Length: 464
Ligand SMILES: Cc1cc2nc3c(=O)[nH]c(=O)nc-3n(C[C@H](O)[C@H](O)[C@H](O)COP(=O)(O)OP(=O)(O)OC[C@H]3O[C@@H](n4cnc5c(N)ncnc54)[C@H](O)[C@@H]3O)c2cc1C
Image 1 (tube, helix red, strand yellow):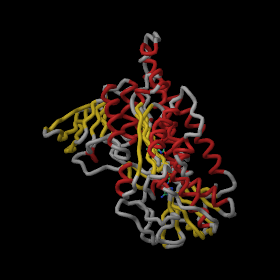
Image 2 (cartoon, protein in one colour):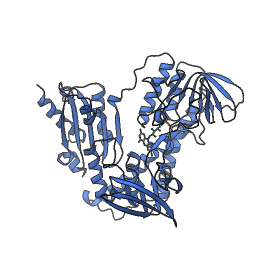
Image 3 (spheres, protein in one colour):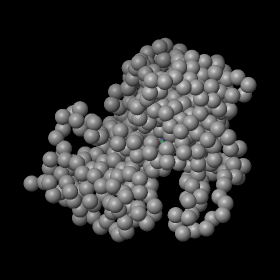
Image 4 (cartoon, rainbow, N blue to C red):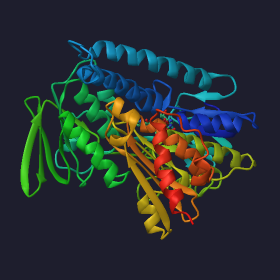
């Protein structure tokens, strides 16, 4: 670790030591000697490990186990009481996260890198200044500063003590009642978590459907599951105002022509995140941003300043860890004169960890239509499939899209463990497999995965 007032030159400097930043530093260090990482956080590790993927999936899995236990009767089991122990849940999560963050901290603090625990900003096109006043230059820079919770201009919202996902992931008690604002992935995953641990949850979403990243059909399945579990879901609303008085939050919104006001002791603002690009001196660095605030990048992740690259949430367009890592590796290879294919978003894989989960890969039906690509499609429901019936996991379906020659272009899956199931189609899409090739695969019986063989057969039947 280094704290110095001197001007130092590096081969490569990364600002932000999260998933994207660490991947860029590791990749650059394969061929370069002097690589620096700058991160201002009190605890190193980045969003995914500390306040994102890993804590949320730890808690969501516990809530799924609890949900199954509470529905033991369906499986012929007598489980007299199954309730959450929030202290124990919290402690388990902290222990798991600590293991991941200790490992990441070791990596960042290894003598392969020079680590600065500072905030950084550009003062010109090739120099950054740290908050201790020291200045650093480099042959190439990577900006990987991530994202932060956004506060849309809803009357009163900015002035109330709302929770963010950080607070919900840090709960060591069960809140009685929570209003969740938003219907994106984080909002939905945590709304269901709260509901399953025993909170009363009212979710208020602006668009007609939750989860705008997926098809309306996929979203409708999750909406149905949420309502069946007792989440009070209002979609297609117009949020008017938020206030906080006597330790209670009130939210007023329009819904189906009526003005409604709901209230609860807790409010989670999950209306989205925005790139953490403030105070980075982007203008001084000659680095342009898009309207969304994301740093504008070419296909090799290079910004308008050819010495500077960006990756991860600060660059967009997808706030997904493996995308941040792919972008980082492409960028660092490009900066160090090595070959790299740009990230291919036509094979993008996305997962929503609700229950049922959603997995999507490749081109969606909407994208196929927008691009005027002729396609074949077939689907199959989980309520007519052996393994899902015996698992009482009957929500959802699989759907496959292929071109007229049978090459798989995309797929969607809504089901128990869809995040696992979608990977066989991710391989198919990325390797441009034909449905006929995929039918040569041994699809084991009885598994959830074998359901893919039904739409694949239907598409194969349609091929000339
Ligand atoms: C609740 C939640 C659940 C999620 N679940 C998933 C999931 O299941 N799967 C998935 O793929 N994605 C998930 N995500 C998204 C995922 O966590 C992010 O896409 C990813 O972590 C972004 O990585 P990053 O490297 O871009 O940024 P980060 O990991 O946020 O790293 C940015 C780093 O930059 C540092 N920094 C910022 N500004 C400066 C500065 N000026 N100077 C120095 N340092 C600075 C910060 O301290 C931070 O350590 C989730 C997100 C949330 C909020």
